Image (cartoon, rainbow, N blue to C red; front, side, top):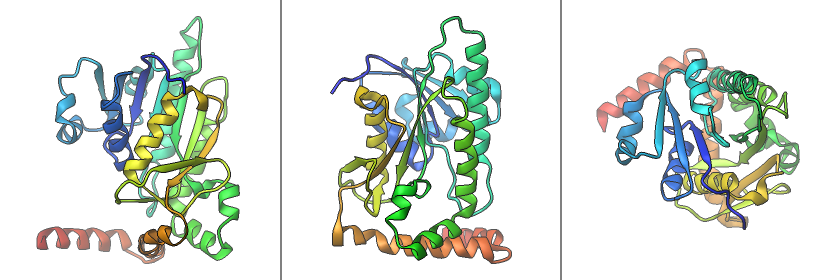
Length: 272
């Protein structure tokens, strides 16, 4: 496999679970100059105190709708990794807002560049957004997933429409994992044909970095990512799926769900 030489990488979403794992893998590599966007530097450094004085890392702090911050972060980046996102239960605009900021920043950078080269964007999507993968599910299961997480998928749909609108501006690879789990790593499969039931955050982080750095994936536009668990072994993710679906339906259809959930989390934190 051919690996890119010393790329400038912009990472958006470094304090989320997927972004944390991506950053952990990148910190073990010796092939990058890293530009990290985060809303709060204190939170980022609490997670990764070792990066505070790393000369190869620059920080860009602010709101994702701050065009100046995002433009400075993306300036000079050959690779952009975006793992931004929410849990998908409540209405949110973080994905569409960040997508608009990315596109706005790249348009400004292209306008002032004499020899524009479109960067490569490795973008966190979802297997549910893939018609081939969705068709392999029982219809009832697919309906339940789309209904429970409607808010998240709607935000993602709008965001993807934005980033895919101008192929000359940015080359996009949509990374579409299945159910994300706090689980031990099992290894991962990359496929455009099939996916299994779930994947650990650690495996997804490793997959992101491989997709970003290996030249063999340069022409790929969409890829499914799932753990190396098939058959009965993959059923370990079934309880997580059931809990997530219950949470999704509760948050979408029960009045006052956000308040109830916040109160429950505060009570749980006090007990623990």
